[in-house]
Image 1: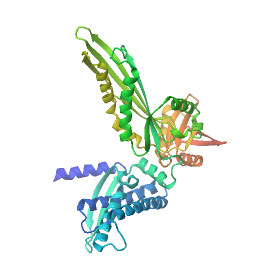
Image 2: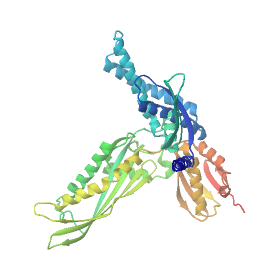
Image 3: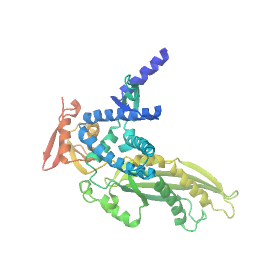
Image 4: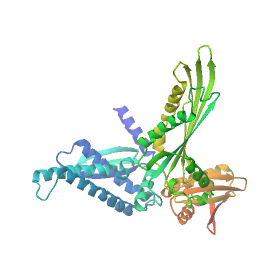
Length: 434
């Protein structure tokens, strides 16, 4: 009993240390509802109450959020209703038994759909049920108390998708660009007449994987052809502040997956006709609107040996290994692709009078952690003894960033600063504390 108490205490401490939020909810069950079904609906109601509290903590408008949420959900419910009506062939003169079955199925479909709508079931990556109970007066009334940690980044993203909507297309593309580097061996020695046969086969199979497995926010996946490569290079060479106003339509909300593969021949034993190869590979996922790297992935470095056999190409064995070497990282890449942060503005700010680079990095961390509702990301562009330039990417207006800085001016003793705003040029001057 003492061990169990200690375990509960440790678990509670772990949840409490993660900025937990308490919530509660209720649900009216119906005949035929299983305990698991009721429990899932109760958790959903509890999540909604926690999300409401978190919206207030983030300074977001909870009333508008739930208004837009309910409006969108009602649109989905109308589609569900019409679909179920067709399946049950419901007419004004339908028998009561058919009508009752229709209402039962419709209720369950709507309740199941609302749990996943706007990814509400993903809002609490960590949560703990404190208590589930039922009313003494009416056994159909159930209640829940729980506490959990909100995914603030996801909540902010959903908030702006519902309340304000993205300023760009909701759906983008994934562009795949692959480079193969052969060291110490040629395609001819691998038994491949045309290098496009090798590269095309592997690349097209990778592309097929993403076409089948792409997340919902990606409309299509395709290879980055020469014409789009040129268009992309011209766009990425623009000054950061100009980029968002000049983005080609084909790159709106889109991503680029750069894959680099290096195949090195280590040796060839002529007596046994055995070839030894070393394989290395990397991938870089980039947001094409901002040219920010969203993730880097390193494939497992391996060494393989093959015996050359008459009428059999070593190239097939090499291609097969290269294909599987990369696909192990694809699920993680897909997961990262789901979370494209909306960006509607880019702004450069200059920092001056800082003590050292640590103070600059602390400032970047402070701004990003407090700019969640603007989906704000900041990166250090350049720095010298006198000045550091930071590029900020965010979903909002210039005045909202100025307001954020004003709120943070006295946030920390070692990060005291004054905001310098002249002709829409934003600067931060640190105040030295003796």
